[in-house]
Amino acid sequence: MKTISIQDLKEGMILAQDIIGKYDLVFLTRGTRIIDEHIERIQNMDFMYVYIMDQDEIKEKVETHQLNRKVDEKLNEQYNKSLRSFKRIYDEVSLGKKIEAEIVQQSVSPLIEEVMTDNNILARLRSMKIVDDYTYKHSVNVCILSTMIGKWMKYSENDLNELAISAMLHDIGKSKIPKDILNKPARLSKDECRIMKGHATLGYEMLQKQRKISFDICCGVLQHHERLDGSGYPLGLKGGKIHRFARIIAVADIFDAMTSERVYKPKESPFKVAELIAQNRFGVLDPMISNQFLWNISKFYVGNIVKLNTGDIGEIVLINKQMPTRPLVKINNEFIDLNEQAEYTIMEVII
Image (cartoon, rainbow, N blue to C red; front, side, top):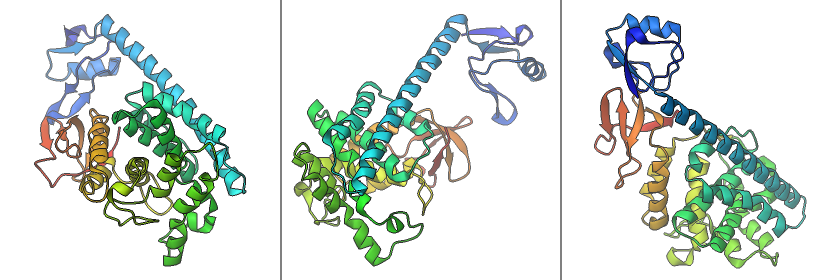
């Protein structure tokens, strides 16, 4: 970075720091490539000098952009590959065919590879624009999120593989639920709820017949709606009776379902959903899994631009480890600590 007089500004230079104008409004952001119109306006403002990037910084910026683009393209390719594979499994099962363990393994392998090699996969996943049926996308997303949690909890390679398969198949029983119930754009009736809740048992019954699918995988599918206080279904299990895979899938399932656009409801802010998980981490959801998820997931949002309930737009600059759902947000030159100012809430992650 180097300082130059505004009289020496030339078209093509790249800003190394934001230019803040009147009333603390950002006129130009860091990384902007200067054009003649910018130069004219800057010279009419009360500035003596600006900061621009030197050649090494520009080279690094270009290389980072190119690398990120390649990583994004690879994830997009792997994601779509898994999505196509899962759609085939789901559609064949709905027609009465058996689940092929080899095809399931093929569908999760590229996702496991991405999770193990990319520490920022959530941010890349969020930026992807995949237009497809919610049921398919949800299963792939829950597979990725569950595998990420397993990685943070230092699961072995074999456990991660089985967890990923269980998470991918957690809703496979929905292939046997009537589509008018599955896709109903309104609140389900009591009878419809009872039928919908049967998907966990249906999925389990399908999988336990397959010799190459382990009991652990089957338990994750059967129990992913169980809750530690016994309020879940289908068995109303409590505490330690709930399989560890099911506890992980439960957290991933809630997060993806609530942050996704649905037929009958708009998506929620990831921070609002994270707060719901935080509120339920003692007694309903597994506290250790919830804490691992909340701390690690929140770190991905540092640097993101968010909209608050006041309408203000700001940047997340710091995550509070004790309360990761309530970060420090910078709005212009003011810092708002959501942990201390409860009246503020993050409504939307913009970028």
